[in-house]
Length: 103
DNA sequence: ATTTTGACTTAAG
DNA sequence: GCTTAAGCCAAAA
Image (cartoon, rainbow, N blue to C red; front, side, top):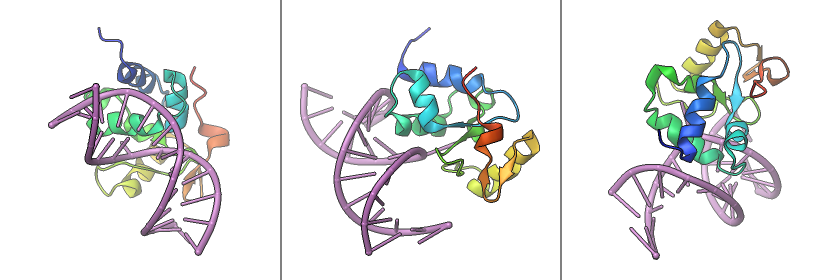
């Protein structure tokens, strides 16, 4: 099993419980490099672990639907998260209620 | 080993 | 809310 930065990201992303979201910066921090939020996005776009890695549960630092290339992009992402049980605060995710703390 | 790039973030217009 | 600019980081070529 490889032990690179991305491996940690995938592992953490897989652990995101349903109805919760996490920010790119948060994942980067949990992986050991708080400034590598961009890399997290890159790995999500690659998404080598396919449906196993719920990349749609990864949002911007503000709960904004950043990224997502599938469907209608951020628009479809918002619908998916809402179905998962994530609370929404207008156009953004309600981080105060649905932000995954990494545990 | 060097360069390019990008699903980030923050600041400013 | 969107775009531009700069900073930071790791992967891919």
